Length: 295
Length: 303
Image (cartoon, rainbow over all chains, first blue to last red; front, side, top):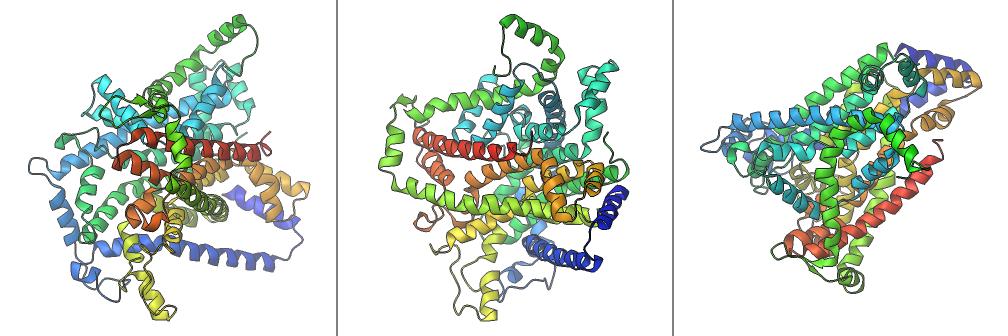
C-alpha cells in the first residue's frame, strides 16, 4: 500500500491539474460507487430481513424494509424440514464440508501446476491444450451431464462421494485464470531459478506460487464456491450421502408459501462462502501491502 | 500438435526433455479427459440423431438442424432474445466490472475488502425467491409498492408475466448475478500490476488517471481482461437459468426465451435429446465466433 501512495504522490506531482479538482472527482466516484453498492446489497439485505420475518410480516402491505418482530422460526423450520428420519442434519453438513474441502484442495493444486506449465514451459502440445481448455468453457450442453453419468456408471462409482468429487477435480476456469495470471510474470525469474538448478516442480511451488497470491486466493474462492453449491441429485441416491444444496433446495422449493424458509436457506448457504471470501481477500490485501515487489 | 514444426525426431527429444512438465499436467489432464473431453466427444454426434434417452440414438443426418432453421419459429425468436440479452449483459456488465474493480483498487485496504465483498456477494447467492417478491405483480412487490407510493404508476405492473417487461426484468437480474467471476479476476489482476510501472509512467510524463489507465493498466491487465471477457461471453450467451427460475417456464409468449431455455425445453421437458443437442451446438458456434472476435481484440494489447 505504501508503494501505491507513493505512485499516487508521484503522479500528482507530475499532474498539472489543481488538487481540488481531483478531490472533487474522488468524491463523485465515491458517491457513484456507494449508490451502486446500495443496489447490489439491497436484495441480499431483503433476503436476510425476510429470513427473520414471521410469516404474517412477509406478505404485509405495504412491504416493509425492516422487521417488527424478528424470529428464528424460519431457520428452525428449515432444519426440521431438512432432517430426514434416519439422517440427522449434521450428516449433510459433514458431507458438504468434506466434499467442498477435498474439491477445493484438489482443484487449486491441479490447476496451479498445469497453469504454470502452460504459461511458462513451452512443451509440445501446450498450445493445443490451451485452446481445448478455453473451448471447453464455451461448450455448454445439457447432453454432457448424461454422458458424464455414463462415464461414472462405467467406472462403477455412481452413488458414492467419488461421484461428487472426481468430476469436479479438473476445473478449466481455474486453469484459465491461473494461466493468464502467471503469464504476466517475467521469464527472467524462472530462468534464474533454472540456472540455480531447481526443477519445474520446485519452481512452480517455491518461486511462482508465492508471487501469485491474488490469483491463488481467487482460485480458492471460485473452487470453494462451486464445490459448496454442487447439486449431486442425479448421481447420489442414498440419503446419508447427500449434501446441503440438494436438501436445502428441497426444503425451499415449495413456492412462495415457504418464502421465509427459502430465505433462511439462502442465508444459511451464503455464510460459509462469504467467510472464506473475507479470509482470502484480507490475506491477499495484507500480503500485497507488505510485499508488492515482483522483480 | 501446432506448436512444433520439424521432424518427428526433434519432437521426440523435446517431449523427453519436458518429462517433468508432462508429469505436472497429468493429474489435471486425467480428470479433464475423463469428465470433460470424453463426455463432450460422446455428445457431439447426438445432434445428428433422434435420441429419446430410452432407445438407442437413431441417425437422422442433418434433419435436426434443418427443422431448427426452417420450421422452428420459437428457435429463431430465442436467437433474437439471446442476442438482445447478451448485448446488455455482456459488454455493459463487462465495462461495469472493470470500472468497479478499478475504483475499488484505489481505495484503502479496509474499504477495499468491504466493497469487494459487497459487489461479489450477489454471485455467491442465487436465490430467486427474493427477486420474485421484489418484482411481484401485485401491490405487495417492492418495486410496485415503491412506484405506487411515488405516483409514477397508478396500478401494479405485471413485471413477471407481462410480455413487454419480462425480458427487461431478466436482463436486470442477470446483470446483477453475473458481475462476480470477471469482477473478482480483475480485482486480482489490479493487485498483480507491478507498482514500479506506475512510477516509471509518471516519470515518462503520464499526466492523469485516464492516461495511466490506458497506457499502463489496461495493457498490463490484458490476460485478466481476456479471462473476464470469456467468462462474460459464457454467462451472457448461455443464460437461461434466470428466466426459468424467475418467470416460470416457458416465459409469457416466449418473450424471454433464450437458446438455453429452448435446449432445456427439448432436452428435459420433451426428451428429444438429439434436437436439444443440435440447439446447443449452434449456441456453441455463436459463442466460439464471439470469443474469436474478443481474443483478436485483446491480442492487440498483449504482444
